[in-house]
Length: 276
Image (cartoon, rainbow, N blue to C red; front, side, top):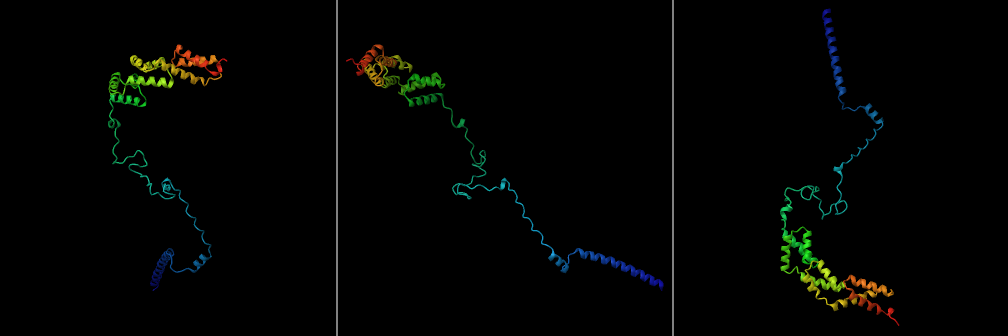
């Protein structure tokens, strides 16, 4: 009997021990899981606790170059003009000046687009350019072509052709030069002959052109020059006036035998030098 009781007590103790272990595990699980039932003590503590501080606003993020706003166009402030569309980023006319679209034709080679002109065409263009600025003698045109590196045979061929068509005419040029220099500057025959030689005019052509200036014309032009010069020499001594007038006529090519009588008569004829 006592043996059965001892065995029953031992089994009961063992059962209670096992039941205690199971109860502790279930209570731990219940503590980990939130309870749906309101806790009066927890609510009271929550009401009495001070409110948490407000969260600080997030710091502004620095914008990079890519996020910068595009500047407004010429159409108005803050908006894009209708008549000036934005420049394309790609293709022909892009921001990159060296970029070309696939459809753009390749640039022409200047060496292939403009063929080299022959030497005669270049020489002809030079001659026409010189003649368009002012009349020129053949010798003047030859010097210009030589300065520009034109060959002598090419220059001769071009100038011969220009002479045939009348664009280069030394006779007409010599006559024009004599008339203009004698009328505008009052040059005498000797000075005119020097001008013709300097321009490369043939002596025979020069003599023919100088034939249009006679002795009477030369004396008349000298008298006009002296009378004009005397108007700015009033009040000077007679010898000073005589010396200056003679030097002026000599520079213009008048000989002494022509100049001195004209100067002497002009100075003596002034009212300030007349004798009572």
